[in-house]
Image (cartoon, rainbow over all chains, first blue to last red; front, side, top):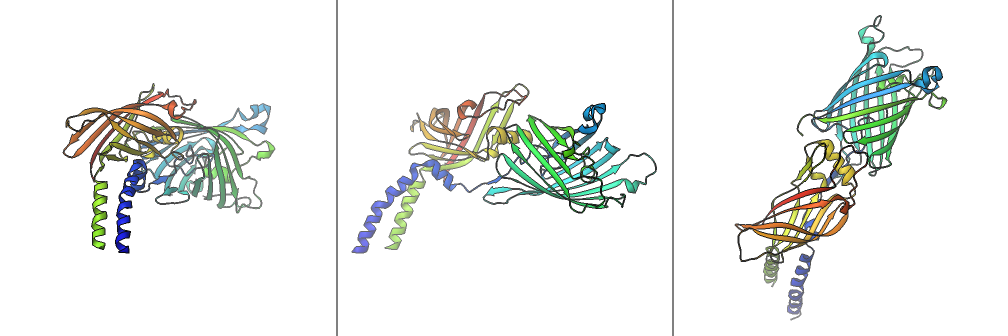
Length: 290
Length: 177
C-alpha cells in the first residue's frame, strides 16, 4: 500500500520536473554539448620576444618577413651620434609549413652571418576537455659567419643553437617564457670563451592595451668562461601591432639578433650605457590557403 | 511494478524529447565590408536546440571556431575584438513568432529573444524564414550586429578601416532527435 502511494506521488511529481527542465533551452543546450578544448592563442604578438625567439610559430601557409635593426651603443658618444651612425640589420623570412612546423632563413650585416632554422611546436597550452599548462616549442639553427672574408676555414665559421622555448599565457595580458639554450661555436678563443655555451633565458610580456605590449628578456650564461669579456644579454621592448605588421621597439645591450651573437658575443654593459636602440618590424602574408 | 515505472518514465522522456529538434547541419557566417579588405568568416561548430511545440530556439557559437581565409585575421579577431579567452561563446535564446502550423511552405518569421556577444546581452528581434522539409525544419536568418552595442572596440592603431557593423547569416537545419 505504502509502495503504491509512493509511486503515485512520484508519478505526480515527475512530469512537472521534466517540464521545468525544458524551460531553459539554452542551459539544456550547454549541458548537452560536450566540453570544448580551448587552446591558448597569441601568447606573444611576434615570433621574437626582444632579440630571441618566442614559442609562436607561423600558421600554415603564412610567410613572415622580418626586418631587425640595431643601432650602435648610446655610450659611443656624440661623435657617433649616440649610436645612430652605425646600424646592423638582419633581414629574414619565416614560413609556416604546418601550424606547428616553421622554417626560416636570414642574413645579418653584423659579422655578415647567414642563418637557417627550424622550429616545431611540441605541446600546446590548453584547457577545457583536456588540459596542458604550457606551450613548448623546440628551436634549432645553424649560422655561418662570412666575415672576415679570408683566412678562416669554413668549418670554423659555423655555430649551432638548440633551444627549448617554454611559455605560459597566464592571462590575456600576461605571458612568461623560459628558454634553456645551448650555443655551440666550432671555433672560439679558448682563453676567454667556451665552445659550448649554456644559457637560461627568461622573459615575458604585459599587454598595456589591445595593440601594445611591454616585453623583456634576459639570457643568463650558465657556464661562462671566468675570463669572459662578454656580458649577459638584456633587452626591453615595446610591441605595437597594427594589422598585418608588428613593430617592436627595443633597448638592448647587444648588437646581435641571432642566438650566437647575443648569447655569446654581447659586448655592452646595459647599466653602463652600453645600450643599443633598435627595432624589429614583421609583416605577415598569407601565401597559401590554410 | 518496476517495469511499469520504467515504461512510464521512458514514455515521459520520449514525449519530452520528441518536442525538441537537434541540429542536422548548421552554418553561421559573417561579413563586413572594410576599406582595404572585406572581412568574412564561417563557423560550422554551432550547437542549437529547437522546441517545435513552444517554438523556443537556442543556439551557441564557439567564437574560436570561426574560420577566416587568413590565419592572422582569425588571431586578431579572437585576441583583439572578441576576447575569446574571456568570452568563448556567443548565444541566443528566444522564441520564434509568426509561424503558422497549417502552412507548409516557406514562411517569414522573427526570433525574439536575448542575443549575447562578447559578454553583453541585448534583446533583439532577428528576421528570418522557416521551411518544413520532410520532418526537418530549416531556419535561416540574416541580421546586423552593431559592434558598439556589444562593447566591441576597434583598436585605434589598426590601419585597416574596419566597419562598425557586421552582417551575420545563420542557416540551421533541425531534425528530430
